[in-house]
Amino acid sequence: MTSPSATQDRYPYQNEPIWSRSEKAIARTAFDAALKRELHEVIQEAKQMASQIKEPADLWDLEHYLTQRRREIDRKYDYRYSELTHVFGRLLHEKRLREEEVRGLGKDKLKSIRSIANFLAEDAA
Amino acid sequence: MTSPSATQDRYPYQNEPIWSRSEKAIARTAFDAALKRELHEVIQEAKQMASQIKEPADLWDLEHYLTQRRREIDRKYDYRYSELTHVFGRLLHEKRLREEEVRGLGKDKLKSIRSIANFLAEDAA
Image (cartoon, rainbow over all chains, first blue to last red; front, side, top):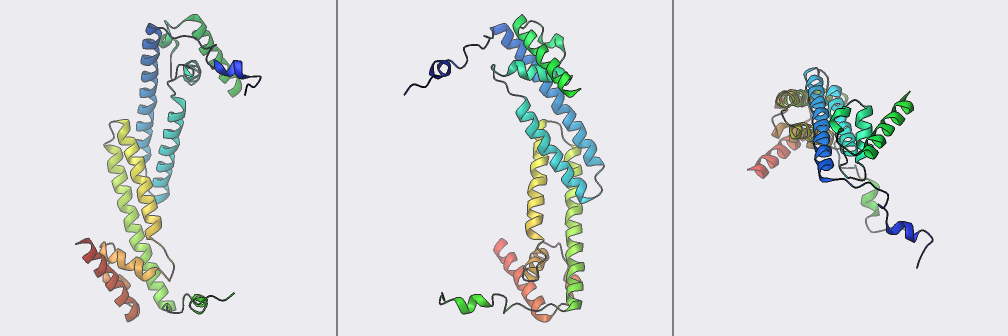
């Protein structure tokens, strides 16, 4: 069976940019650094919350906070080349990534990253 | 339709002891005190774990610990009169309840509580 969209489906990644070896190295370093900073933030916040626990409700608030943050981080840090410009765009918007950290990526990718960051900034405004 | 067990099913609680008003008051106080102590323990442990977090893995260990303890406490502290002697038996076995805290309950109930505590002690040995 051949549906009208079969030709498109056959090459789902045909429009995706190719990542060179040096781009992959830059991406990996930037990704890991942002993830490390975000995890460090969660650690600091968890320590702070724990130190202020007085009631059992505070305990379950901490559990809830950790579960939410773990899920959010799992979703956000998606290291697939098909997703990376979106990931970096979001991180740039959230100020978890500085532009100089992705310097060296191709112009098309930087444009895409900035465009996603700008879109998210407008969306939030 | 009448099944052979219909007569038994009709009175599922017929063998359960009745709790007098004074027994209910004793039970409530003992139950709340044990729960409070156990929650206090979890709070102390969570503060301790949080203060020692170094790696992200320690963070998720804390989340896992909190989730497990919350579920365990939810299951254990079942304030239904049909369950209370089991609950107190377990708490006695775990040394989360002292016998004098349930003093004033009927002899049948105390016997049942001790018997469950002994069973759990033998089971653990």
